[in-house]
Image 1 (spheres, rainbow, N blue to C red):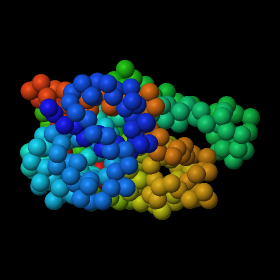
Image 2: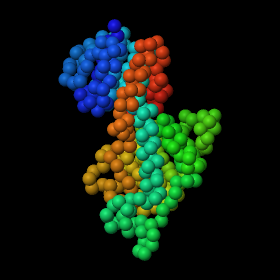
Image 3: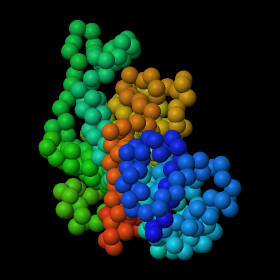
Image 4: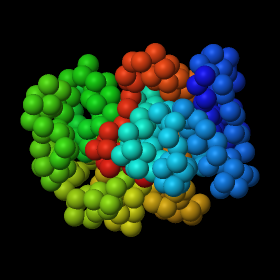
Length: 334
């Protein structure tokens, strides 16, 4: 019989609605629940992995060591109920263990969030919901109507074209937005299929009315948006960051936003969370949120569903739908 280790901490187990799927999971094999993994010794925790054919992981799980994976000769698949799998040693994929991710479910809710924020800032909606006089004064001159804009026809620049960037591009289609993409890994053929214009970073920044950051947090991208890059963005443009805070020089961003030249929606920052007295929290041209872009609460079961479906496919002798390759692993955010 197949042995399945459910290595989700108690809070993650509940958050991912695992109790709703428990009967289905038990129907796939003999299930070992490990809801307090950090209370086990290394030997005890390692033994659970070594006797398992499959493992379910998620936010806050205790990663196995490379040594544990070396001894886990029965292990065929690790199904991650969250996005990035960088917590799982790369060796797992090198060994031939299939590692899957539910990042596609997260991506569509983040893309939706980006669309929402772009429209809020274009319409200057904040002035109607915030009683702060500073915000009202920034948006509305005495005796004049608030200037508002439509999304239709605006040029959008996507920095990174992974799952989130692709979903966002699809949401933009009905608005007829010319879409520029900077992604070193995207081929010309893929750009043509997606009906986007592949370009370099500086050209994208200079031509875009909305700049949306979707690059991974890896050593090559950290600090990729600094003072020089921000200065290239046209006056009145919108800067969206729902990716990772470390991609942007926070001091440079703060200084740029304090000029009032740009608008920004920041769901991620460096540091995270921002200190309570940080200027970015209170600037009238900044919409700040505490890393809530995705997933939404009602999307969590879909993430568990994806993990269990991939597990079921493997047990039926089929290929999982959402495996992570070594190349994708290396380009995934920490």
